[in-house]
Length: 366
Figure 1 (cartoon, helix red, strand yellow):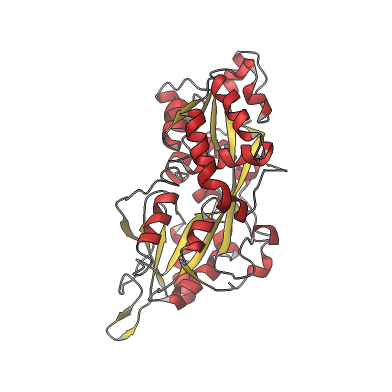
Figure 2 (cartoon, helix red, strand yellow):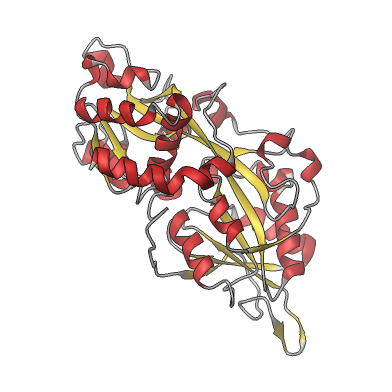
């Protein structure tokens, strides 16, 4: 379910040190950091990632069968914490390949020289609009997903109120005190929502928008878990916690996450998506500079662009494939929201403006 796989929430801009867990994705042995074992090149690839990395055992076993490499996953907290840890340890990297840096944080990783260039096999099957480092190939796009406002269908039906669909709707009086979002200093989706408003209203307009949103009673919490699991009335966890907010900043993949394992399958998910509020996130993988097993790192990045891995992702990490022709499972296509025109921002603009935007947001909202 989403509450165990889509946790990208903590420490995008504030340094966090999370306890890392070393887990074997499939059987095998070797030196954990990808060095040499008994004088021979190691057949272990160490993947450094956020806590949300997930893949089917059968898929990881196929990688081992095809390449001879065994993958060990070193989890480093949420996306921002994992990136910050990688920067702190860049002179002595903890692994060989990193997965999970997204376009909101990409400039920070690249400016700190985390990755060695590598042009992955299969990259020619990836849409050019997600190849944000195409000139240097320091990172490879692996998946995409949309951060959007979600709504509790039951609430709006019972109150005979149409759910909001756009950023502009959220400041209307009928939605006063209904929205919960995440702190942009401590949350990846919170930051993405801020970037979406900046893309919509521009440098001169987003601050006025947030003043209106604050006046309309937006609630701010630290993490996605707090927002979706506890404050939002539409999630399974939210119902148990008696969440009171029918609007929450989450993902376009929340609807299928809410119906996994539900029998019989409902006609529609209890959660809807305001598709006019979405910001497109893209996640990347890269060969860590100084990796002890760069050959294994490259092999795993190649594998992440195969249809085998790409078609496994939707119900493992609730993200969309980026490889042309990769099919999503029927549950994902039946219940997931399709966002035709998500907001985006160029990486160089995010790099130039992000810290100032966050400071201004804190002054306005907190």
